[in-house]
Amino acid sequence: MTLDWIQPADRLRSLPPYVFARLDELKARAREQGLDLIDLGMGNPDGPTPSPVIEAAMVAIQDSQNHGYPPFEGTASFREAITRWYHRRYGVSLDPDGEALPLLGSKEGIVHLALAYINPGDTVLVPTPAYPAHFRGPAIAGGNIIDLPLNAENDWLIDLAAIPDIVAERAKVLFFNYPSNPTAATAPREFFEDIVAFARRHEILLVHDLCYAELAFDGYQPTSLLEIPGAKDIGVEFHTLSKTYNMAGWRVGFVVGNRSIIQGLRTLKTNLDYGIFSALQKAAEAALNMPDSYLDGVQTRYRTRRDFLIEGLAELGWTIPKTLATMYLWVPCPPGIGSTDFALSVLEQTGVVLTPGNAFGRGGEGYVRVSLIAECDRLGEAMARLKQANIRYA
Image (cartoon, rainbow, N blue to C red; front, side):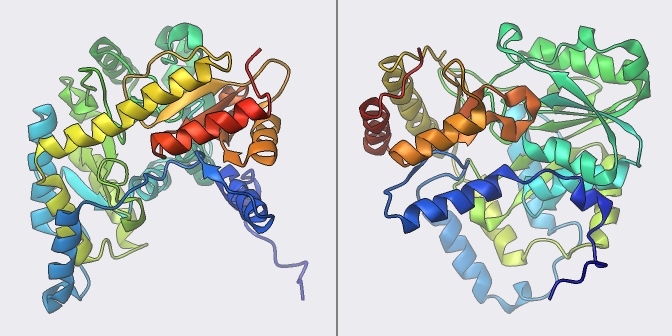
């Protein structure tokens, strides 16, 4: 029985359908019809979690001291592992007591940060296209979202000079993400210096999503926002173990940076959750303590897939520049067809799942995101199916 007088809050009704949930429905229907799906839609790494992580979890779960509520701010040993890892990877010194906070995955933290700092009507700057949490979090909080359009001509970088001063002066928060999901764009250190100067000049809180920095290729080393002098005065940076360590289902992430900003997020979270199961924090410590040689293997795997898929798409008419980071390719739709229609057409004709670019905001229209989450034999099968269906860029 449906009660018409019970309606969800306006903040929920204002949200458009979550495209990934819709994709799950379409994939389930396709499987029911017997299609052998090659799912290149989600950013869900294939392969197992590294054995040292699993072994650490198995030991920790047997210890009854890990069975109670964890500390709200995370265990001291995990916070120390986070700050040691940041210093090793980026040369950034952080205080584990206040400048690092474990999260139930970075998505949770990004959305809750929006709730902690954005009042209804506050002006929020968000690139488009962007990872959905970057604009859905502010939308749930009631923020006034100002799109910052990205384009291929500007290498998918935010054009800070194009932001009117009147908008910048009103802005409270700016979300950004390099290496980028979905575009796979990277930003030079000079861009980070410019955005820190911009935010300090206009008194804007910077929120940087660095979830793909360890998936970097060809000698490229991504920049951490916190490497830039003065950035920690005005910003925080999110990270996750989902991609690098094949721990997507474990839901472990963290935020580092400005102590006061992190304290605000912690205060909100104390009213919403009890944090990560302590045994999982032990497993996450084991991941962050793994040697960098493990990362070399991860990078090689994704670089090989990148090269294979770019070559395969070239045979079908696409010219895709070599990406320097992430687990994605950002592929233009053939002329005359939109993102959703193209992705659905490919799914129906071939069983290959792609993510329509408009899932990442209106700036993603005209593109699809392809995830490098299958071995080359399956990627080859995907290309063969597209070729057989005469799906080309022309």
